[in-house]
Image (cartoon, rainbow, N blue to C red; front, side, top):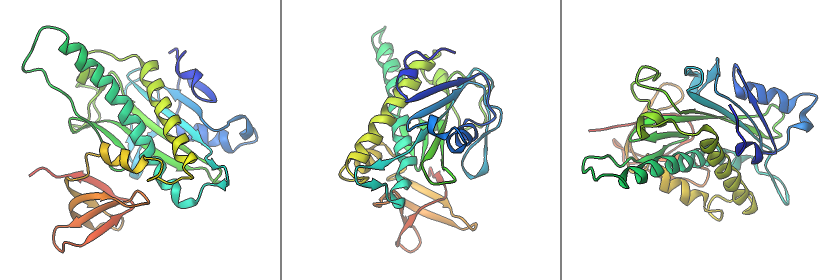
Length: 281
């Protein structure tokens, strides 16, 4: 694959014909003896990831050439010094917002092109939303997932994302998955989609750091809240330890945790980690 647009956005860009896990590759390079050669906004991408990992130890598998696995290295710093540790929790949400905006641009362009043709009253208008903390859904079906990992020396983090580009019905890993091909009816330009994501990620990160890592002052809190389809939804959260929390997701706290109103007690609980299911009654 060729990425003439995307390769000009990151500080360093490398396409691999095959990788076990782009996160593993970039973590190793960003902390190895040649770490200085991998600056902030370095990118590794492949369309053939053989051992991809998702959240909670799940695997991320897709046929070769039909999806992108992308990992971006961030080494965030404020003008005044290191970014406070509690602000790192916003980066998965920031990356999720960036991917949501990039995917939404592709889907809206396809919807606009379809609208310019013969009028079809039954033509769908697709909804692209962020599922807390960092899955991207189209009409409730997952098209992208994100896995963020701190570097072992805490000098930065690697944000890995998988994006379903050209999977057909027979390729989908789960019944709740989809692809840009299935939604738009055509195979998207991988370079254009990736460039959109990298641009959004770069710009959102810059705004966040200019505001001293303040999610409210930077506008990140408001943006994520507006994109997040989880908010206002009935949810079941599988908490660490095997307990379930069922209620309504009502907001995000200053650290990006999901605030859920327990349907049994009415109490508000802030969830930092957990597997969220949107309930449909």
